[in-house]
Image (cartoon, rainbow, N blue to C red):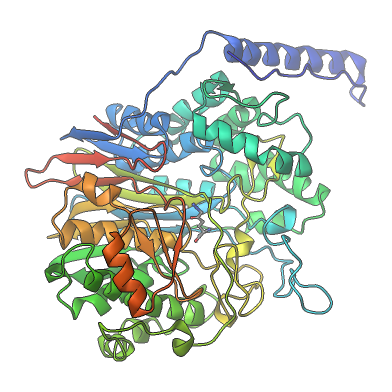
Length: 588
Ligand code: DON
C-alpha cells in the first residue's frame, strides 16, 4: 500500500523565544506523528460500490460510497435529511476532491414531509475587485485560460455558508456531529478508486503549475487504485469548522489562508469579499407537468427555468405517444432544448443584479410562439433563432450531486461544484482544499463561448458581487405534494437535459428508475448547432432519419451521472446510482 508522507515541521526562531519555538515545534511534531500513524496504519475504510438499494427508512445516493455511507451514518444517529445531506457533502469534500468541496458553491432543494419546499442558493460570487473586462487584453480579446485556471478564476466560495444556513434552519443533530465522518476520512485516509487515480495523474502537471509539490495530491509515482489518500490539513480545517462554523471560514484563519494563497499568486479576492458572503434562501421554481410538480432552482441557476421552458413546450405535444427513442420524440425534444437554451444565452443572469423577464420567459403563449416554426419534417437552424459565434464543447467536467430522503419523507436534492475538476487548481495548502474556477461561468465577453460552449451576453456579464449563471439543477419531482423522484447531475449544461430525460423516461415512458438513469442521452444547447450524444443514444435507423431532417451529431464519451431516488407506489425508497461514475446507493 502506498502512502503520502508528512514532512516533519521545520524549526524556526521567532519573537516568543527559542524555548517556545521548540515547544511549538515539538507539539507540531507530535501532532504530525499522530496523523502520520493514523495515515500509515492498516488500510481502513475499505468499501465497494453499490448501484441499487431499497429501503423504507432512508436512502442516500452520492458520488462516492463513503459519502453515501456518511449520510446513512447520520440518519442512523437520528439526523434528518438535511443533516445527512450536509454530512454527505462534507465527506464528498474529502473523498471526491475533484468536485466535492469547501472552496466551491451550489444549490439545495428541500421538500419536507409536510409538503413545504425551500431552495437555498450558495453559489459563488464575483470578488469586489472584479470587472466585466477582466479576462480581456488591451485589444479586447479573451486571454486564454485566465477565467479558467489560477487565482483569477476563483469566485468567492459559498459552500460553507450554504451548509450552515441549511443546518441553522432545518438541522436536527448538532453541527459538529455532521463533521465526524469527513474528519475521519481526511485524517485516517481512504483508498482511492481507479477513476480518482486517473484524474489525479492527469491533472498533476496543472497541480504543479499552481502549487508546490508538498500538497497531498502530488506524489512522485503515479497514483494507483487502492492508494491511501490522507489530507491532514483538511482534517484540521474540518475540525475548526466543526467548532467555528461559517464564522471560521469567512472571518477566521481559514479565510486568512484563502486570501494569503490567492494574493500570493496575484489574485484579487480580499477578506472583505469573504466577510460579506451570504447564502440566500430563494423561492423555488415550480413547474407542473402532467400531474407532477417539479421543484427546482430559480436564478442564478438557469436549470429550473430552462427545464420549465422545455417541459412547457413539450406539453403541447403527445410525447408519450411517440415511442421512446423514436425520430419524432427525439426531434421534438431537441427542438425544444434548442429554443430554451437560446433564451438562456440571451436573458439569464443573477436576479439580484439584473432584471430578468422570468414571467415572460415562462408564459405559455410566449413558449407556444417559440414552437410556432416547429415541424416534424425539418430542423429549425439555431442561426435562425439568433446569430452568435459558436465554438465546440469540451468534455470531462466535474460537479457533484447527492439525493437524500429520510424515514419521515423529507427529501433533499443538492448539487455543488468547483466547476472543472479540482476547480482553478489552486490549492489552499494551509487549509487543505482547492478553490473553484466558477468565474468562467460568467459571459467573459458577449458572444464568446465558455468552457461548456455556452454563449452569454450582458445579462451574465461580470460585476462585483454578482453570481454567475449556472446550469446546476437539483430537482425534486413531487406527486400530490410528496417527494416522488429526487435527482440531479453534473456535466454543465447537459445537467438540465440529463434531468429532463430521466424525468421523461420515468413519467412519460414508464421505465424503471435503473433503466431511466442508464438510458443513453442526447443534448442540444442552441449553440453550437449540434446534437451531442452518447454512443448508442439512437438506433442507426433513427440517427439516419434525424440526419435527413438536418440534425448534426457529435458523439461524446459520457454525460454526467444522475444519482436518483424514487419513492415507489408502496412508499419505499429505491436508490439508483448511475454506472457512468463511482456513485453509490445506500439504504438504511
Ligand atoms: O454551474 C455550472 O453550471 C457549472 N459550473 C457546472 C459545471 C459542471 O457541471 C461540471 N461537471 N461535471
